[in-house]
Length: 337
Image (cartoon, rainbow, N blue to C red; front, side, top):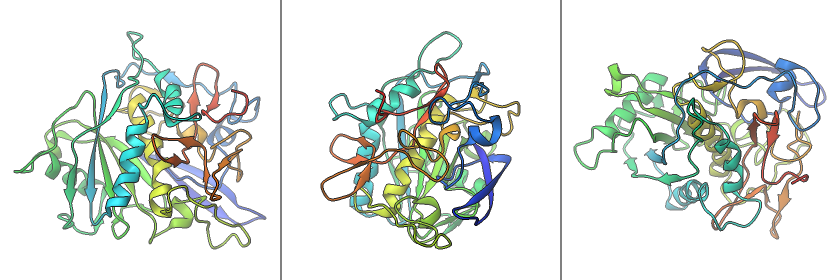
């Protein structure tokens, strides 16, 4: 979604006012889901509303095999990269245990282009680029993010391939990098690069590791805000609060990039500058009954870690997405499936 600015005050849990401004972003925050705020009640299912009109605006969606190209900006541990790589590889996995990440992606696949072609079921991990030496500094603006992508696709050695029609460029910043609006307003966002900066129009997303900067905001529910006393964090499934928190934000942005890569395809609302996209409508909903400050019914493994989806070898917590056919948020761990 285009940037969600949240002004909050504490009343019992958290009372929140959402102000939408024209930039793309996402926060996995303690707040009522977007359909409550924008469209009113009528909740037969989690996040559902007969007033939500997810419309197609004739722009392209990603119907060809999708290739995600990670750009690792800053210092990353091998174990951290492995968690994220395995999540991306799990999106198309056919043999994961139910409920699976691949089952979550089936909702995204329901969206089509003007020819009726569905979004691709195949999501591949593409070539990667490392920027260990912070070539653009440790404080990035939205425009300098595009410069980082330019550096990755124009590098003298092993540049990332240019793939405007089915490539997604995923910029991941380490926990010592600050990005404009990070923590205060966004945990991740997506858009497309400007030819005047990068030379091409490429769909991209940025997601930051919030472990040192704001885990209570961007790694919720594996960390909780200090201003909510008594609320205990849940145990993360892969033992890395920052990266486990990133997974759901990555899922959120990839789902929206697939359905709205140039911000002219699938979205709700009247304003194309600030569209409400398929993941925005389900923010904070991870299971049956989710909404407000409640995540919904989740699962726990033998070690007490919390998750809602299985990957190839790991477990993850990923927010649900909007199903435009039935007009409610859906996920593979729903109790009515």
